[in-house]
Amino acid sequence: MKYQPYDPSLKPVSRKLRKTMTDAERVLWSRLRRKQVLDIQFHSQKEIGPHIVDFYAPAVTLVVEIDGCQHLEPESLLLDAQRDEFLKRHGVLVLRFDNRQVLIETDAVMAEIFRVCEERLNHR
Image 1: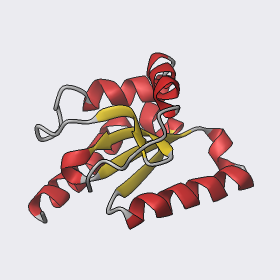
Image 2: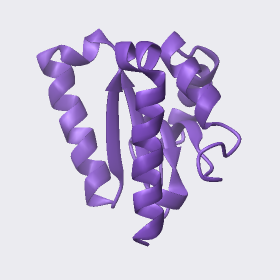
Image 3: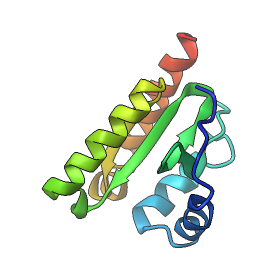
């Protein structure tokens, strides 16, 4: 997927989100940044189309989302499904983890991200 045009008004929002990461986002970012996973570059709080995603790896067209409890609300579930469908239409795979998984099962989360990245690298 090539970068999708994005709404320029999202840029200041994404910058603010990078500065105010949740604990779970900080933990995962510490493991994804600086090409620590198979030398793949991840971006945090990246604008894609009309959306901002938590982490994006363009080399493997992968988005990693970390969901807090607000994502269990019916309206949030619908919005997440719509966003995931938009990304899927553009060839992007979305992995979702909840805060608890990232904070308590960090190694398992990283193992799944590594597995998916490796699989996507091998099937390009």
